[in-house]
Amino acid sequence: MMASSRARRREALTCTTAVAVLAMLGAAPMAVGAQMAPRALSLAEALRLAAGTSEQVALARAAEQRARGQQTQARAALLPQLASTLNWQKQLQNQFAAIASRSGNSGSGTGTGSGSDSSTADNPITRIFASQYNFNVGLTASQPLFTGGRATANIRSARAAREAAAIGITSAEAQVQLDVTSAYYDALLAERLATIADSAFVQAERTLRQVQLTRSVGSASEFELIRARVTRDNQRPSLLQARTQRELAFVRLRQLLDLPAGEPLQLTDSIAEGPAPVPPAPALLTTVNVDAVQVLAPDPRVAGEVSRRVASSDTSARARAAVLQAQKNVEIAQQALRATKAARLPQISAQTNYQRLAYPRNILPTSLNDFLPNWTVGLGLSLPLFTGGNVRGQIVAAEAGVIDARQRLKLAEEGASLDARAATLQLTEAEAAWQASLGTAEQAQRAYEIAEVRFREGISTQLELSETRVQLQQALANRARAARDLQVARKRLALLPYLPLSPSAPLAASTNPGTTR
Image 1: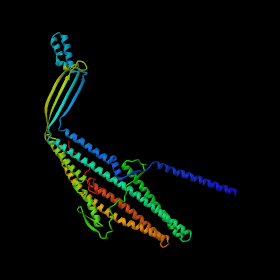
Image 2: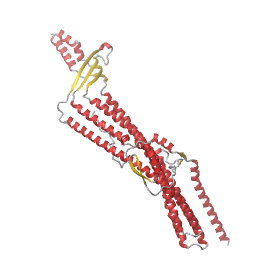
Image 3: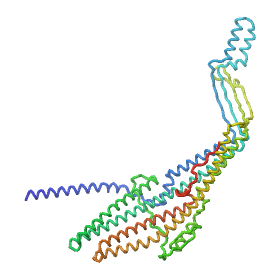
Image 4: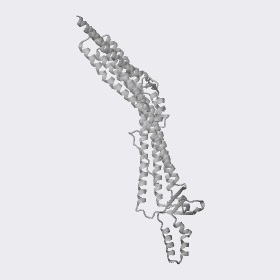
């Protein structure tokens, strides 16, 4: 008896120690988490953070800066070019010095003509050509007088490219706003779905405890107990999946905002902000004209709300950023063709070159008198006579570039029109889905409350309770998704004039046609 008592006390002490250790291990992460308070983040704050950290916007700004540099280069073709030169040279062997040396030696050996040879060696011209050191300082200037329109075409092409790049910045900023808005509401949706899954698991756990209690008093069968336990266990994978999706959604949001990976976030905006509730409408659908698009709405008041939002945003094809960029690409291609045709015309330019040359006896000149002036002025004309078909081939390629740019402009206009219609239809659908989800969620909640009471009173079966719980979970999830889709559809329609075309729309050229310099 004493041995068994000691064994029980030893077992109890071991269990107590294990519980204490587990409590300490569980309290450590809580203490670490308590040190890092969650950061309150609103949608407006998220948009502000993304504006300064987005890689897409940075790339668009770099492209605009590159286009500005190319425009400066194109303008320089019409301006005078001025360059300075500075040259020092030492000749290790000089033919003129060798000639002068041989002339002096031959004069001293024969004794005739020594005066002539001496004068030749000491001649200033001979000293210049026979000098061992040369020092040259000069200025060279050139001014194009006639380029056949090539320089002007290149300037206009560069200006159009810069304007297209500036439109690209606006388009990138709008796309970032839409991406951040979608990621923000995706995180809210994932958090809401995780809450719904957790609530469903708690409800299934509570049902299992009720069945266990009724089973203990003999009012429930073993079959009902097993079914309740299986229902509870089936909720666990959904709960784990919802938590994983929530974590991934928050990781994506942190990446877009360039926030630390481990920083907890508390989203302050609500996903449930929808339009003002309207009374339930009849089951008949009403056809409404929204910006010349036939759409279906469940109620005229909903259609009026959509029409007001569409009217506040310019959804015409010509106002889209992608269409404006395609128009600039057409202009670039046309100017490239003009510059290519100018290669057949003569190129005239004026040049001048001013130099001061010195031929010192030592390494460097000793005074300004050692420098001798040299100044030339000239006109140059260049006219291609035969290029073997090179110019003709360039013109044919440039004409094809114009055709390509015009066709891509048509594709961009068609895609923008389709995109605008899709945006209006998506907003109408989101409005209708939100209105429908409100009543459905309320009715499902009420149905589950009644089913729970009926189950406790023994009037209904566990199967009825489980089916009602699944319906409630689905209704709440549909309501959260409808709220998310509504918010994103509103944002997309507001940013539609500045957004790139959607992948489903015909795409215009993303790169500008090349110009002939």
